[in-house]
Length: 211
Image (cartoon, rainbow, N blue to C red):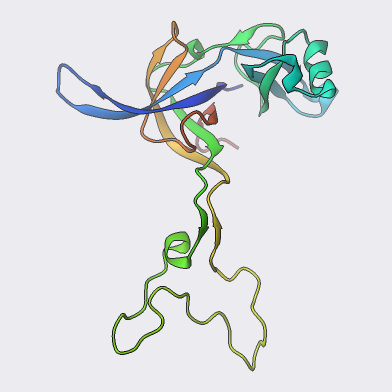
């Protein structure tokens, strides 16, 4: 069993330590309360997991199938439904998971959809170096050769080229809980986490070295 919760990234700020004068950059996450929709067990479902809901919305925002699944477990309409494999400490169907399961100093990893950058060239997307800018060079920001003509007479799969950048699921590991505010359902995470402002994120306890 581990700790886990869903939340919304509100943005970044900094926290001052009045004793040392140190400044800590933190990400503010509005996490939970997340109703426990379903608890799965290996005996009945083949694996252990807990389904959490987040971001309550009007019924018209969801499909009939989604509403039926939530109603089966007596949970109202919510925009986001995520399964946490392995279960969550103290998760009981019909109750809610709150930020109180975390404590300052807890090691966590945060997953979210990274900020989309659109179509980008190889220098920005893959950190390529640019070519010379003098002596008539036409290869300033171009990628260069992507394969010979005689052999293989084609471009191998996986060659790094220009294309869509960002907008994919990213998990940031090695983060630490800096502060917890149960009254406002706020988590302060030291450092930056993936995603834009108001993006949905998943906060999980990190246990490195666990099988």
